[in-house]
Length: 255
Image 1 (spheres, rainbow, N blue to C red):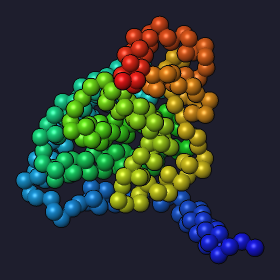
Image 2 (cartoon, helix red, strand yellow):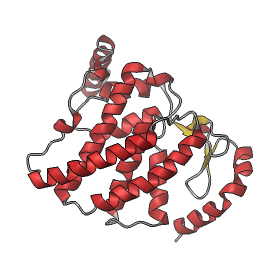
Image 3 (cartoon, rainbow, N blue to C red):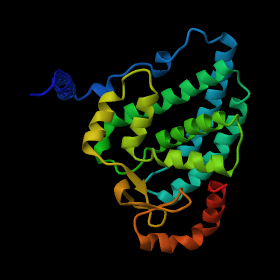
């Protein structure tokens, strides 16, 4: 006979499934994400400084991503290179904020990315979307930059850059992007959407040579721990372009 805990677990799963099936548009009904994360201890000065930086970042960010398409991986790569410089510029100002100001700015960026995903889910079926969501992906990059560099007291070197790149790549598919924001949100706006994606999609990564998005289970990773390939042929074909970065990243990795 099943134990009491197993019975309770099955009942809980059945209730969650019933809730999801009876309210398929639950992901679209959402709150003010920034207000959800508001902390009563934030000072007025911290709030003003953080919002000022947020507005500056948003205007430059929106100008950068306009016209971008995740189906055009060459354009996306160029835009991401420009985004790296923008994020570094913003981070220098972010690092000068107080702890309260940093928390406000992080929550603002997190709320922006969440809103992008909720709005996107209203107009397209993310379970059938093979590409990353540009605005959300770049927002993930900004948040990961803050998290990783803060853990190194604002430092920046090749190892830290590789770490940020790898962790951002892990959130490249719609499913993992939604999971990234869902785990960091204080509200449940993305909960139903994440369950839907988890049940109906697989994790994917782009091959660095052919730019095709493939199931993560079928990809192989270069020994530099950054580049991913769908086959040995793609890895061999891309190596002449990748070898200099590969050697440098591997050297940093083995320090």
